[in-house]
Length: 114
Image (cartoon, rainbow, N blue to C red; front, side, top):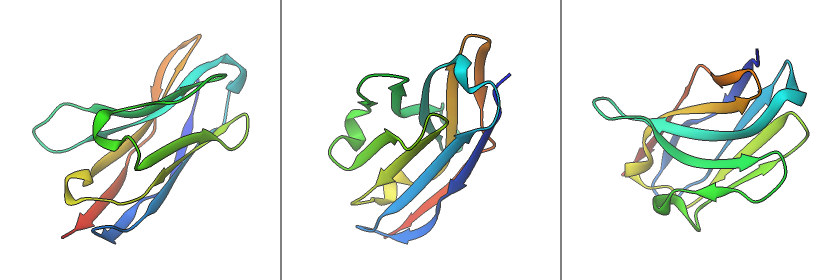
């Protein structure tokens, strides 16, 4: 099992920036990829960005050029969010695909005010 600890998020004005961090605290060597997803009430969870343990990140079209995802260490990924828009408001979840299955963090709220 992989446990994920998220940090970051909060309230920011349109055009502002936020950084989300996700740290895997167990079985990190079983991880194939990590990423961030987001969900608003009444809608399905959607992929924001994912990154394999080696290779380039993949981004949703809506965040390309504004968000950047990278490995800070073998166990931690960072999502840098810039030029934030009100439509980026959501609960953001860290997720991982590992050899033992898929796991999720508890979620962190990101709110962008207009």
